[in-house]
Image (cartoon, rainbow over all chains, first blue to last red; front, side, top):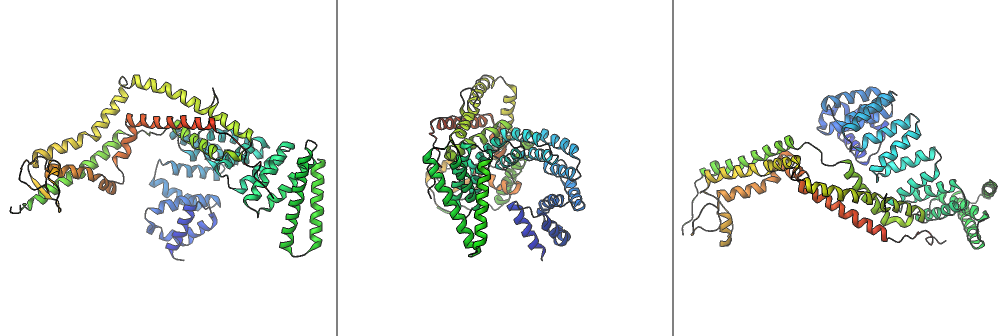
Length: 287
Length: 240
């Protein structure tokens, strides 16, 4: 491969925020490193990228080389300081990393990157509660940062705070009302929360997700389970019960058809699927 | 009337030296700005406000995907009567405005800022203009390659008061102004930045305007949220 091709590939990854760490480090070591002087100013961008990738795959030798070049070229730069934080993290010196991040934040309060880094360090240490606290402080200021909302949702799920996780998911939904995966996720959280009301909401969100993407089999299963659950609930009015029952039957039929299409006419497997779904249904109503 | 013939030395001694002076002054100004205006303008509160506005807009546009309870809780976050984000922002802002209005002229910091601004953006061009005026003031230095009306004489022939001169001759003072106003794009090419990028937000008037703009946006956004009638779109959103 010619070095300019490698450069173009790396540039594309950089622009798309694709990580591809292992391939990136390989490209760098095999092709681009001897020709680095030909890159001009882009050299430093590539170095930054390679440095992060090298930390990703624990190639500390590559990373420290990059870091040395960068820090001699740009002493006092915040971006380089963040790379140094990554280095400390890779060495598992979390306390030093935290101190360094704090000093960076103090230097430039308006920079979002070090604040997020801090959350990542706390998460790596397993201090989920503190990470949540930090991240919500961060989100009080940078409140349209979708990545951060998503991360907060994950963290809340780890702590089994489903109500709060649902709130984060709703925030994402506000910004991407046509993303079927976000609908599905919110429905799953609501389903996990349980209770008649939440189950009903989950059913509707599953339906919306399925409507947005009819190939989403997970939401189809979701429709089946949540509507069966709604139908089995004692709080359910009779008209709603009927509707939910219809919906669950319909969803089951759709799932069956999907399997039939995929597998050809293998009735035995389908029978067992139906049995399993019936069991699942039973379990969810008794629990 | 016979055609005027310009001395070819004018090209080197007037046009070239003028362009060079203007360019050097541009460079000087950029470095003066770097020297004087180091503080960052954007602060945390501004970021927060801008992002809050974006979030509120998303809520307005896509609030229908949320269930009613979630929508209301977000609406209250923005416009609760005493604790809402926008309410607090407005209250703070009016207070700030009163303070800043009364203290603008007393405050030495603001005054110094104003002086520095003038020093950087107004004084060098004036000095250069005076120099050009006294050195080359009464010279014709170039010619526009097309005919224009007599009304342009006052603009193009500043400093040269000859009644019978055709309007397409340009005097050196006017040439200086034309050069001066058109040189910003050239300096952007050479220096990679324009001084106006730095000056605009730092001047107190610009800051006040910016604040007013966000303030108005906050006000209208709050009103929009107040009157927005929420309806969950999913309730009748699915049919088999």
